[in-house]
Image (cartoon, rainbow, N blue to C red; front, side, top):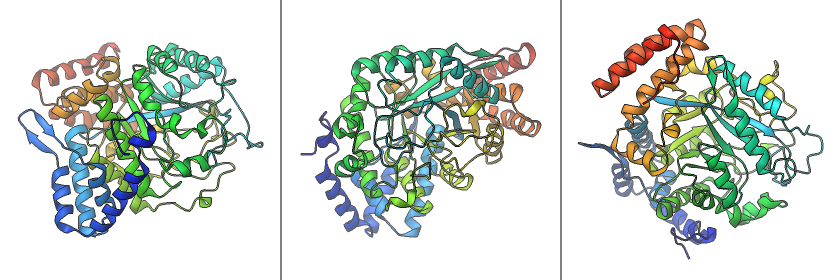
Length: 480
């Protein structure tokens, strides 16, 4: 029986409810009156306290996803952009993945790290190698990392992950610092989540891969990841362990996208119902080519058009959630997705273990092909040329504005007085320390113009004062 407040995976992600939702969506995909009503409900509303957005239920959002009327789809995109600008402005947060180890005991059919792949080079970074990777990332200008590791209790125990986090935070190279480490590792225990919280992580990220239980078990034939319930209930254990911010995601292309979409929104609804706060982020990866993996082997691949519609519908359904797209996607796809709600992207990424210290991009330990191979500086310049502020900000994590505290700021619009100036100040740091001349020129003009968009005059003056201090005496890491 479907129950969003249940802690049992098969009750809050209920197969019967998803199938009824898909049937309802199919029956109403041409219902113009209903679709207009749903789109109107999704729109952000300006109030005296800021912006308000109601969001959509999984059934309402599924109706929009099923709709094939071109004018209504365009309206979805318009509303998605309205929501993104209302709550996140024109800021785009930048991060990089850091692969620690590709040792893995699972048999996942879509990942080259699966245990039966005997020809991939297995590698686990030492703490010294991690230190050197972080120096390389700091020399690029990164301030936020997402660490990744395969599931292997012998090679990658929680103690290794915790030691690696400590090493990352210890590296102070020139003006560089990694100010926040997000963690993408396998489902684990409440006790281990407490250890991660105490290590000072930002967001705990775990992709569901697929919400279809039968498909999930077939795609994960061996290893601890085979346990659907343990994996699906991980976010509840993470929150029980004191981690405020969690990140969801499915790997689109493994199963039918409409099923996955409904499950994803239901998972967000479940977190809100049980913990009072939904996911901090939702990622939208697609199956990509990799060593030993042919995406054509999966018959649920989706077009760029459908992929864009999925992102827009996620933004309409969960308006306050950050949305992430990685370098799995090429420049053209990423540009389009920025217009329909994406608020975080990776830049200059390498998905191989130890890839950042290699002069040439290595491929022998890559988890997936990187489609967008531009440097971080090229990505920063591209974002600014398209009207976005590249943000390296991590202030909310370090100021304790996580979980429901972050969401309350976001919902009232007060985040504009924090995130907007913080984005400008971290951009200024990047321009001084790392940017090429063209990037610097464009960035300085953007900062000058965007200072005028800080709502509160006292915040604007203080931001300008901090920026001048960066230039004149080399100070860094100012934040509101």
